[in-house]
Figure 1 (cartoon, rainbow, N blue to C red):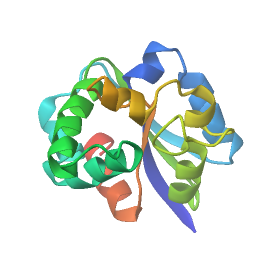
Figure 2 (tube, one colour):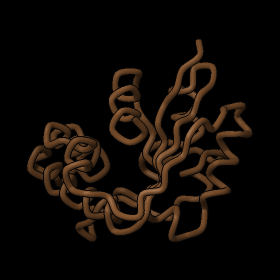
Figure 3 (cartoon, one colour):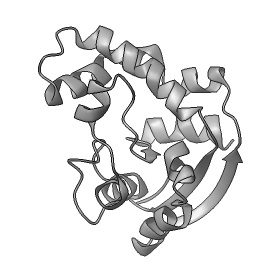
Figure 4 (cartoon, one colour):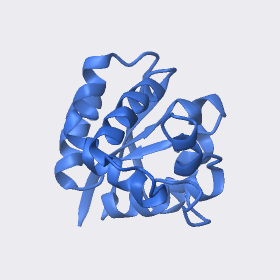
Length: 165
């Protein structure tokens, strides 16, 4: 089934000159680049819509699975959200509309698991990532994992409208 989804190359991908490399992973998987928008600066209101406070618990639980000493995943997740918004806005980003058969699932597969240290080889995060959830938690910051990819059709629709209307 044909779908369209959103990928955002985050600041660390641009800082490390990985735009072309990342796009090649998606194109090699048979996906099509349909639209691209460069954001030199991302305003906080857009980030709060993209990463709402309601995500705190799920983010905290993901971190707790890697760092069991986290006792309050909701509070931890809120701290991570603030750090994530800061990381996301520290420099330019690139929003990309990608289309293809089962694009959401395929983009997620090509992108790799959230934690670059656990992402499979052959994925963007597994091959190009240099950070980990454990390291970022220890250092009190968001994990730098190069890419955001929409997780489901509802998220893709909302995020495409937010970033590439």
